[in-house]
Amino acid sequence: MKAVKSLRYVVLAVLSAIWLAPVYLLIVNAIRPVEEYDGTENWTPPHGFGLFTNIAQAWERADLGPSIGSTVLYSVLGPLIAVVLGAMAGFAITVLRLRHGFAWFIVVFGGTVLPMQMLLVPLFLGYAGGGIYDSQVGLVLIYTTISVPLAALMMRNFFSGISYSLFEAAIMDGASIPRVFGQIYLPMARPALIAVFILQFTFTWNDLLLGLSLSRSDNVRPVMTSLSSLQSAYAGATVPVVLAGALIVSLPTVLVFLLTQRFFTRGLTLSQI
Amino acid sequence: MMQLDYGRARPRGAHRGSAVQRSTRWWAPGFVAPSVLLVAVLLYLPFLWSVITSFTDSDGSQSDWVGLANYGRLFSDPALLTAIRNTLFWVIGTVVLPVGLGLLIAMLTYNIKGGQYFRLPFLLPYALSGTGTAVVWGFVLMNGGAASSFLEALHAPGADSLWLQSSPLNTIVLILASTWQMIGVNVLIFVVGLQAIPTEPLEAATLDGANAWQRFRLVIWPLLRPLTAVAIGLALVAGLKTFDIVWIVTQGGPGRTSETLAVTMYRDSFVAGDYGYGSAVAVLLTLVTGIASVLYLRQQLSPKRGFDVDGGGK
Image (cartoon, rainbow over all chains, first blue to last red; front, side, top):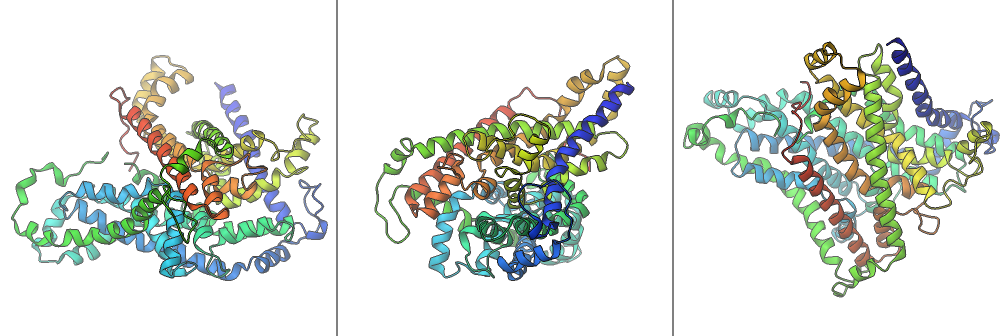
């Protein structure tokens, strides 16, 4: 029994080392000053400390400042609107007992089944025709829409666990429907709303494909698109600069994830059909 | 559907015509309308548009109806056949590796002291974006990069491999790189599942003299089935849609050998400007995804299943 236990720790230690190695390489080489980097000694700790210079270089080359600003806008506003809309849909279906509610739910949720690739060309042409290609409004719109189906699913699951008599009592007391929703159901759903928001925030922040297809200018395109352009211009930007760029644009989601792990878990539980 | 809908438990007509029903009737459609509208205009409409475009030779500015010509081209296009093969590799790889290893890590860190800290190294990459992962691994797998110098230090074979230059090696190493990232979500899913398992059957099995492997195979595994189904379903779809890591590390190259269907579609549409053909590839990808999901769901929903661990702990 004891041997089994220690074997468990050995296996874990080996796997952990493998999993942490790329993280180590990322950090060490993002810190390495550009002059010190020659492409051969990737594993050795750096002698100098060039992290801030590298970040500054990446920042300037890929024009990360405005791009990060826009991405904050997309990944906060999009999921925020989606969570409220999804909660409204879930509320209508489970509490207000919308006629053919389940069919409408399938219509909304079915949006997630379509591969994004299928939407890119029409969205690009449609956005170009409608004058919202390469605009912040256009990107907020699509990130909101992409987040709606999962939000509707999770909020429907949450609201279906709440007794109907609560709703009846509120209506008997003379509360209007918007008030019941805004002042009773929405506050009650706060943990679920936060879980959905965090999942969608991470998803939006990490998106590459939509940003690549629907934006072009430095101040509109989201960070992952900027990072990919920094990477493909490999000839221009040296390795430590690209890695420093990757580190800095990944930091927000890594922090959010580590600080809110329990919400992630809750989100996963709520997203079962 | 796993949770009880308490409201529905009572006879449906009970409220019909009551004050509560009358006051809600007009509000309900208004509450779903925004969601339905957004999804219809920005997801379903483009979807239909793509289907129609796949029957044309659209280059963005003008288009003529060409019938099934694009679909005919699909199966004589060597780049597409490579993409189909690679996508198949990706599906198998992402279903087997991240899900299998995720289960292993969840089991190893379950019920041990400091389990949540032992899990951390595996959860960390999951928080990283696909793009970040691609940048890191593009660096690790460079010619003479960190992977090669590591093998060299060990005097292991393969130190002089050009990881990204030949097929199918480039696809295989990218699948491993993606496993590094995707394992996290599976660990989380299985940890949720393990925590929801009641202790009684495990204790009973131990009393009956079952060893660790028997306890896993006969008690834990059947109880985890609903969550395994979720994990495999997610991995299946993710594998089929693989794009970010391939696009950033190899751009599908060299010579289009590491392209997946999603990359082929993107390249044909946005790089070559051949929207008609790109849309046909997208339709193919959608069909494959749809068929795989239906087959998978049907197999999952077939009557012979284990006892349900309802929804995970609350």
